[in-house]
Image (cartoon, rainbow, N blue to C red):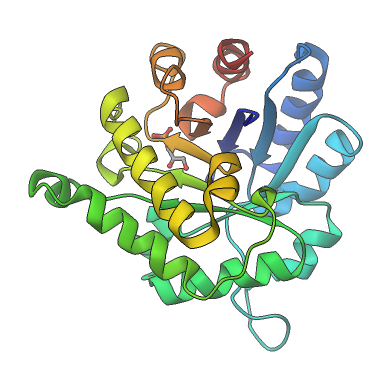
Length: 250
Ligand code: 13P
């Protein structure tokens, strides 16, 4: 019922020239897949993503977007610009933005709305820091982020949203969430979505897991019924490891 999505968040890695070569190689080596693949490189790489992947099975998008539609906002990139480049997805609320750029839930919600206005599917990141998990409050904390970002947001079609559960302590640490802990959170997220948008909607929204996904742990994470793919950082940068993840997803 839910097509798996494997999304590579490249963060601030690779130059446009490096990416262009990588894209060509990926196209050459990509096996036919039942799952969906998306690449989320830095802004200056997006025109090359379009060049490589327009009219292919590979989707692409950005890692962030401005909360403003247009205007005197030096350094910002609008949802309309991303739509013009053919972005299908864009991340909002990544914990690195929340931490290093003081992004609040209210700002994340604005960004999500800008994407929806342009028909781009937000990949909404939520997830708890270590001290919150240690206090036993991971589920309410994460559901609080979800509720705040979706407050008053009207969604009709489950393809309009992807949620990514990314526990902060698992990002870039080599320490992934145990599959059953991820499953518990994904179930809680799905049931919160069901209360907000109805059961039929929630049953079809994809909830990705992110945080130290690699070819060694991906199969066990994907074996969980509510884990619908991965938002992958480090392991999406190398062709070999990314292709290995895609083969595991199938
Ligand atoms: P890593 O896979 O490098 O832990 O990063 C996860 C992430 O932040 C994806 O958005």
